[in-house]
Image 1 (spheres, rainbow, N blue to C red):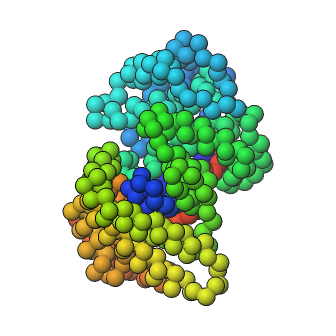
Image 2: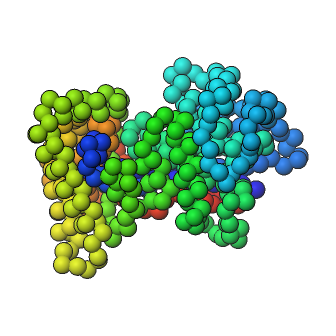
Image 3: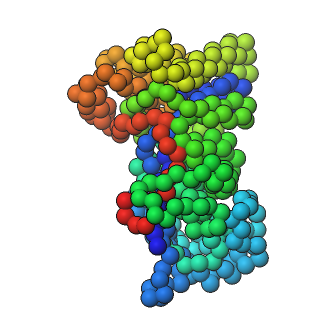
Length: 387
């Protein structure tokens, strides 16, 4: 039997950087996905190895099950009901298994993701041969939550073959987990994220698991239900950024100008709260969809101005802003800034021709563009084969 999972990426609609200093932020899922397929071999296959195929990168890793068992035999696994952090000793054993794969130097950043896979697989499934295939619509390292989507999709397919979830095997098409199952899945995904990032906030995997939108402040996450269909143009500047350095830069600016920066953070907090209220407002209230979109555009522009005052913009981001402004479209960076991705709201009444023109102009600058719906479903599972 074969099972496929898909987990969405995420964007930060408002509040990046300021959230570190106590402000509210809003994140949302996007309908760009990472897909993971899991298949166990039949006896006729005569295959006793665990394979991980990264199709988009044309890479395959393979380990004899006996070797994995020897490396991790001291662990009490599998134990799918109890999400467990990878110990230092287990991490050393997993790192040795990954090192043996001779990952190309240019792709060495993949090592942490492969390590997360080995930990999640053995913790949930134990020492069984299988083939796991990964494909993704999310660009790597661009701030769209690609690593969290990977961890969530891994956890989803692995738990599907456990006693911890109750799936309707006769269901046709994509299927959502129950809320209590999602809670377990999210905890496992967070363990994967910890291997990849060290000290993640939990925001990315939570958005990818549950979908829709979340509001977060000072470590507290609140799930939100959007009543407003939003569509964004996402522009990947392809400019790499150092998130830690950008976060540190904002903190240093705050130390130099505490009064001014606290006013900036308070303004961002107000923007996030107003944005949340608009998104959750009932359909058919006093404001039309167009009026709500206009308010969101203004809030995005204000948020971007405040991010510029924090010092986290970049010439590539400013190029996107100038280009979209020519067509009276509102944009803001999403995530750490300093490059990465830029969001542009696409109003419902905007013609497809205008979107095509804007995308062509941005792509002529060397950027990568794609459109995405905002606030859709979280992780889903597909039973039985191709989809």
